[in-house]
Image 1: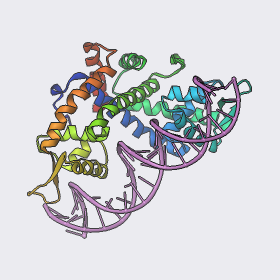
Image 2 (image 1 turned 135 degrees about the vertical axis):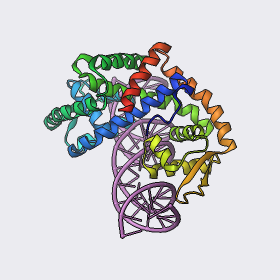
Image 3 (image 1 turned 180 degrees about the vertical axis):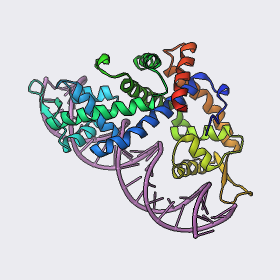
Length: 147
Length: 147
DNA sequence: CGAATATCAGTGACACTGAAATTA
DNA sequence: CTAATTTCAGTGGCACTGATATTC
């Protein structure tokens, strides 16, 4: 389709916002068919990754915070993962309000299979950039994300 | 909450993918309250912007292509904009299958009010970067998007 | 009591696929 | 008849707010 938008007419920040939307949407679209045979949606895969990294020290509110979603939304995502037997909710003795979320053996196994596919998809979508440029992009995005 | 994820453990492409998701989600969240008083959703605003830029030469299939959504999805978005009186569908005499989408006077007026707000939101979210860095980010994203 | 944690119920915004109508 | 364009109908993924129990 080519560049149908005159780029110079767009203020810089606005164009960056549009590109971020376009590119992240493309990554999600590319990831979906890879995730489907595993029975996972993109949001479930993201949550499972965080849970897997947490070393068994992740409460629902932590998960919601790291995913940047409302606590109630995290409940739904975890509920799906529990139903698929990929994670379990472990009551925390110290604070009986809280619940820890941990991957099951099945969940950990799936995470390992997931890793390779996910990296392949991400690498393919951003393949226009070499590693140095990718690192540059990562640093710029990190600074925005940290702000 | 701080950096709860050990960044070095993540392959580069994968972390970039996560950051793209996080940052674009944050932009959408920041834009929503600005759009709400105007009665627009983010997707409607995106479509209206493209329609406004098109100089009256935009068919449904073009719009879908530029938004990177299915033609059927474009129909729904345009339908919402028509109901709000912001755009109109103009039959194309040359090809009676096609429909041109143009902004109405109200739509153009709203676009002008929208522009300022939108730019303000985008600028605020990416304010961690200076113009040179922003241009760098834009160039990197453009190359991914063009691939 | 007030604050924090997690959950329940309902809603909205978004894009998808498959099928149909119209026209080229 | 085949292909292109748009629209109709239904579905799914995703996150939101408000309200509610439980516990600190």
